[in-house]
Amino acid sequence: MSALSTKWCSLSGALGTSPKQLALLVASLVAALGIFGCKLLLAPKGAAAVSPVAAPSTKPVAAVAAVSIPETLFHTAPMWNLAVTPARSPFQSPADLQPAIDLRAPAESAATLTPSNLVLQATLDRLFAVVNGKTMRVGQSWTDPKSKCTFQLIEVGERFARFSSGGQVIEVVLNY
Image 1 (cartoon, rainbow, N blue to C red):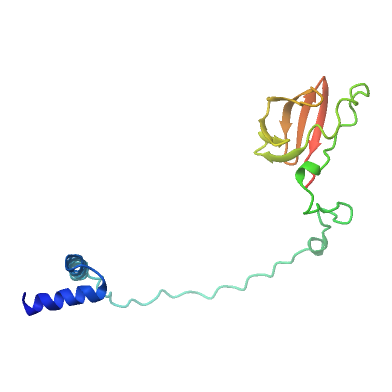
Image 2 (image 1 turned 180 degrees about the vertical axis):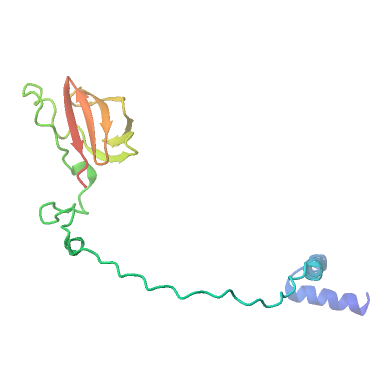
């Protein structure tokens, strides 16, 4: 064994690799440096500097008149009143929220339709509503297992969903 191979074996042993692995690592490093060097040498040169050209003369611009903003825009009332609309409790789950029911419904069927039947949890794209954990599309029907009432989703808004059941329309509002 020559002195060079002895040194190579001791170097690879100090690095914790076999001599073949160290040879592959060094070969790949040399190849990468060669490719990088070729890219630097063969890269296109930048454009040559252009002779300076005088900038076109500009006329002074007249001062722009100040724009006045009406005072009424600074004193607009907010679109919501937090004193009247209570904030949703972060500790209350959406299943505990009570939906609003259309009070114009006939009195004889009001006993079967309770607010606990439908809990609106989300509305999506005015096409889908998540009700009692089930995603429904406009036109789909859902039967409540407790009351055996069938509800058909007829419209979805930004914060509400309207259902039809037994000839009456029920609007469920998103409460948070």
